[in-house]
Amino acid sequence: MKITLCDDSIKDLLHIEKLLLKYKTLYQNKNFELEKFSDSSRLYRKISEGKLSDIYILDMMMPRWSGIDLGNQIRLSGSESAIIYITSSGDYALNAYGVRAIRYLLKPVDENKLFEALDYALSYTKVKAEPVCLIKTKEGLIKQPYSGIEYIENVSRKLAVHLSGGEVLQSLFIRKSFEEEIQEIANQNNFQQIHKSFLVNLDYVKQLTPDSVIMKSGIELPVSKGKAAKVKREYLLFISAQYR
Image 1 (tube, rainbow, N blue to C red):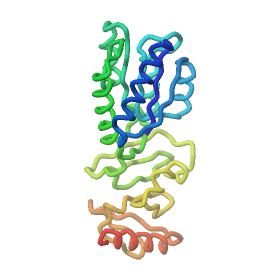
Image 2: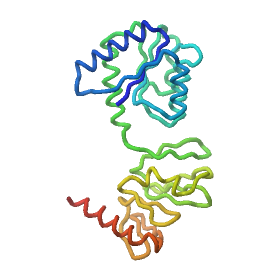
Image 3: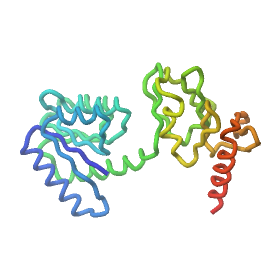
Image 4: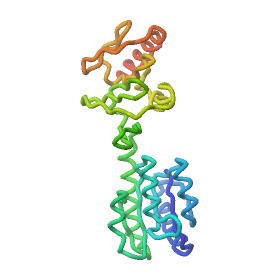
């Protein structure tokens, strides 16, 4: 768990750091790593590189990149990190809703209000902990939890992500190979590539035949000859693990 604090006021930065360390001492079961920035440009660059934290405490008004700019960049990265805004003015509270901030605290930051915000942020991050697949579509970036994916198909250099409810999410053209695009999700224990064009979620497999899998939705998908032995082995290991 990582918390990132960013405030261009060194006085406020040190004050909030002190409160965070006190919180960590009082609640030792809520362990976290603290990262601090007084220069919002450095943090903006780090977020843009995909180096994200679980919780952000951001000053609203900073030179170069404001807290809202940072929040927008966090959301553009596809992250649902918890964002807590701190500011000396209540005039910008409405702006915080655009990036789905969980709290908006006025300076000087009150200890009890910050502690309550941290409690909520930590519970929020646990709820959001389920891994998601980021799908670039013509409507924008869609975050789809792995658990709701039945299978993924490679269709003319696009990903067709078939969901358990029957909906299909269509990606934009993929630049990498299908194997590279699905690499992260394929590393999950319940996902298995059965063919050069198909990745299936084993949770939704009803039956395995020598040359196909039949999904619980009724659709039958091909298993390539070169992958048949591995698919059978992994499926049997998956099934046996369900009964341990």
